[in-house]
Figure 1: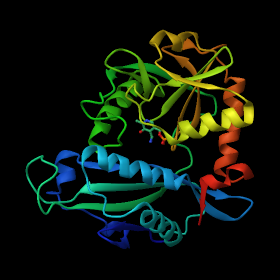
Figure 2 (figure 1 turned 90 degrees about the vertical axis):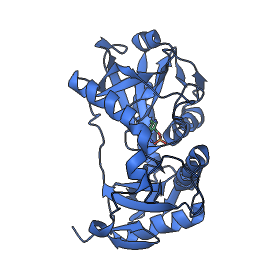
Figure 3 (figure 1 turned 180 degrees about the horizontal axis):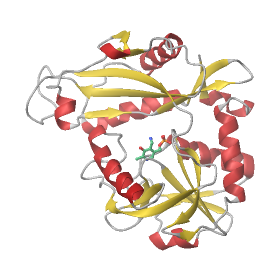
Figure 4 (figure 1 turned 90 degrees about the horizontal axis):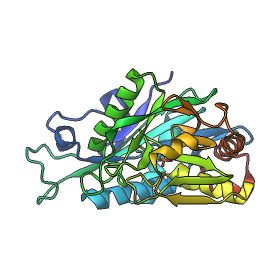
Length: 306
Ligand code: PMP
């Protein structure tokens, strides 16, 4: 592999030099926000394109606003840096991008806003084909860990420290033999997957958790809602979902930037539908894959071509 670059402290540096001091506030307290973005090779154009890049950076700024970080760069500047990184790293296949805005002061004490505080932006890329092996569908369990509440660490913001919750849920799920997990809200309603949003199909309708049920307002979720409506004429209902609805769904799938669209074939060892990947799920997976690879001209506005 050619040498890889990352962006940190206002400049591109070799990846191995993109390091932080162990006294960094974000390392001590988890005071950082991030995004997971994916860029794909467009087979018909022989170049890369990042999927819904603007929306990811808008959400990163929203995460800053929620937890009270300053964002050192605006959306356009972060887009330019991302394009430059994809160039410098000679990316020519599916690539995951991880921008982070982090509290970079070397300071003891959790308070976020003090005079002369510093928040920095950094970015790196890694090749990523599949986050989960989803070819035959995945087995999912309901986690005993609950999703963080909006009044604890808001799930609506992608806060680094909050991913301890994801790590606990996912690790215990793996140990129990599941590929991934569904996490519930404190009230016991279905929130989302460990790091993905959930859709159920019931009676030909798509159902996905309400944005007020402690979920991340996912960009793949909104892309799938739009594709389902425009391409398949399928309505999506966002509402509170009960745990037992998982057990009687006709089809189910997770969506997320890294996960893409992952068909779910069982919940808590109970088969979803007849235990095979559902027809609507297959169609949406195909549409999503075409959209990210630039094969649906109507959705080229979702792509930032590099
Ligand atoms: N929920 C959580 C907790 C996540 O970490 C992610 C991944 N970013 C998602 C949902 C899916 O969001 P998106 O489609 O924007 O990647």
